[in-house]
Length: 116
Image 1 (tube, rainbow, N blue to C red):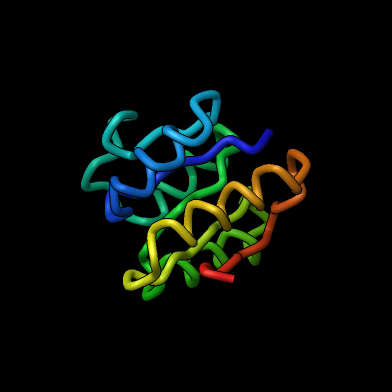
Image 2 (cartoon, rainbow, N blue to C red):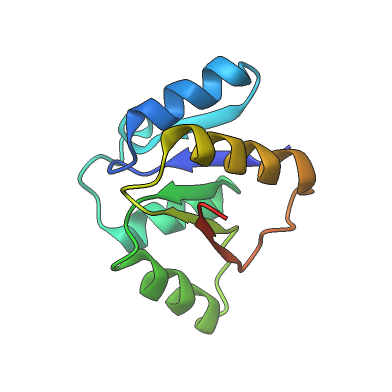
């Protein structure tokens, strides 16, 4: 099963909805692991070290830093970028679809944009 990291800007309603639908989901928040306020490269490095796919609303800068990691030959287990105005229920369904249909490591080096 994919392990997820919720960026500090991710709507907590999404995190709560994911856990309500799937209590066994392995998801942690940046705030819970001591990364609150850290810059994007630091968050991506932590996600890579813990093999977690990053969930974020930050479509402005995360993409650049994720690709910078790939160009540098560094691991990047994946990013799921969610538009800020997306319907919460649809986003939860799309994330669970990715979790259910992806093998560990399958999102490596990938950036997905939600909703589908």
